[in-house]
Length: 151
Length: 151
DNA sequence: TATTGTTATACTCTATAACTATA
DNA sequence: TATAGTTATAGAGTATAACAATA
Image 1 (cartoon, rainbow over the protein chains, first blue to last red):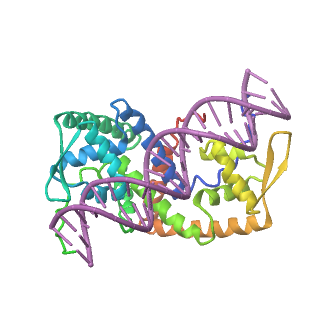
Image 2 (cartoon, rainbow over the protein chains, first blue to last red):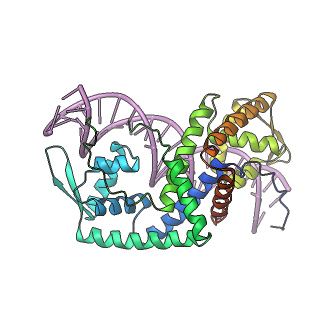
Image 3 (tube, chains in turn purple, brown, green, yellow):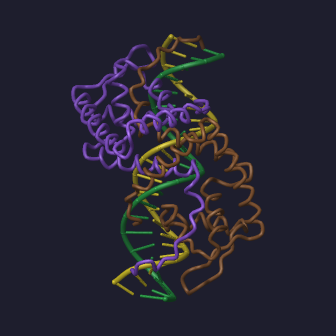
């Protein structure tokens, strides 16, 4: 391919907040997916391991609500982690289960956490400490606007 | 439901940049989707209309590359817009088409643009002018890390 | 009556492989 | 040999409706 053969399009969209937000999210999630694939986890699975580890005895409905994932969609996710022997379930009452990490689950959680921390660091390196904090605050403020009633 | 009946989970995840980025993106895209649904467009369709309007005569492969959408996935998107008589196609050589907005396409583009602008304004209102500019710059810097080779 | 976990299902978005016809 | 448009297909992610068992 010759250089500069392609007439560059006028990019009248990438100055829009919603668009760069979506693209940035995709870039970061994509990179995290690649990094976590090395230990056989997807981002959502790593997130669940971290939350169960920090909330031993919680239920999968509680995890669902916190992550904004529908109960119905959590079923195969949790079943997969139980199947991989990373999470254990014990009945607390007749309809729900207390979740906890298995020994292997703790190890996988720690590995995932290290990968995710390194991943964050690589992106944070693009900014000053002050800027990264401002970015975090700004994004959290937008995220908290989530008005979606959970079903 | 009684208040404070639910034991609040320890949220050890929403301080992570990748996570809040993903959630913020979802919130903003969700709201945009609702707003654009009133004129029967999805965000990606509105984006394509805007880009074709700003680049009369471009091809759908060029739009694909700019938006990071695979050529194969652009086919039904563009077909839908042509079907709705919003975009017109004229052959430029034996294998590609020059795209342009129809009269109705221009009207829809203008309507979409107004909705998207109002949408941006509502989110920008959460921040100072200085902060919003910093946010835009930060997100653009992350988005530009996109190393994904287009197939 | 409301909630938990579940099944089934559908729709969107994304990804790959392969084909054709053209350049 | 590379590119434009296309088809078919598969995998995620997400949405709703409905059900049984339980609170």
